[in-house]
Length: 340
Image (spheres, rainbow, N blue to C red):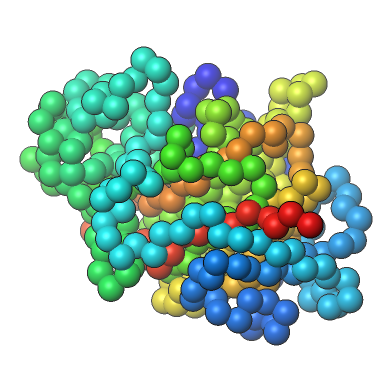
């Protein structure tokens, strides 16, 4: 799609047609013995359990499967960041959406129009993504850093825009952060996972998701989205386009993880040739037959947006929204499927 603003993560687009988005309610139980024991780590090898039943055209929950109905998938690690250092200290992450050939990297430092790849206006977002080099309407860095690292935990911090910088930062209510691996790491098939706490509050919208590395949209895989006004509610959704009609479809579910705001959990998606399986703490919770258009490698995005007019359960920021809120991330990892 030519308009970048139309492909921000979320299950609430006005223009998207819902195939099946089930209501909130599936409470995640303790991780069964079949799952990986060491949930906190990113071992070099990983084994996941997936359902083997024939898939229909709609996505479905994986409800308390019998062990006999599961198959093992072995994987090897291809990407890992434990955030022991600042995420911009090497070349693994970029703090903005990528641009085209006419957008040299210096364009992101500042100047009129430099907010184009630093928010998604279509969603009604009220933050701008900054980094220490970014200058907003100015061409000199403002030195704003939304990324804090302590004891191996990355915090993406959204905070209210200082009044003196409001005009310089295009009148956005908040400054926040985004990290993307576009052009730096992308992979076709495999398992992609974040270990994180999910922040809450009016207008709070954390997400871990994937887009095609070729810049097209969809496909989109929303591995984890938090609904800030619904603590402990996690959305996992797949988006695709029907070639014949160009209509965009989506299918996904909400899951209850009651202590998600206070405890770290793993949220992941396994992309195989025939299906995409979503996991919470490496337990399969839903799956979908791979839709049309999932042909190119995908890259990872993690961000903390503020405000939404499209994603239910977030809402616009107001006087009760937190002045500062942190999306705490312990680790982001990717694995590729072992050849048999």
